[in-house]
Amino acid sequence: MGLPSEYIFWVISLSGIAEISFGFMFLLFTHRYLHRLNIISLIGLFIFVLLIYPNQIYQAFNPVVMNFGLISLSIIALWCIDTLQQIKLE
Image (tube, rainbow, N blue to C red):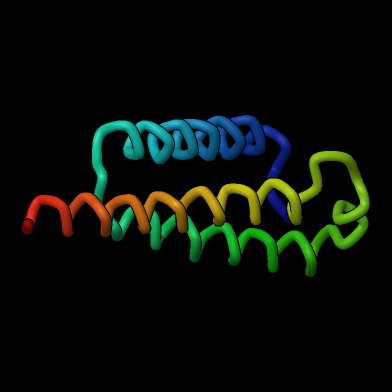
């Protein structure tokens, strides 16, 4: 990637902190935008893996299974949010 080795630790740490923070947002907020952002980012990450590491598709816990599983959970959450909003309106 062209990063000096002393920066790799910090990049990995910051990406882990960002991932954990994004996960906590799901516990705190029930907005549709959060789930839409999740779906778009998982599709983007899947395309990134296809382009950079195509051999990862055949490994255990591959991006196909993990990303599409999480995308389906976000779609289910969007349906539940819609249903809760309809119930509140009645």
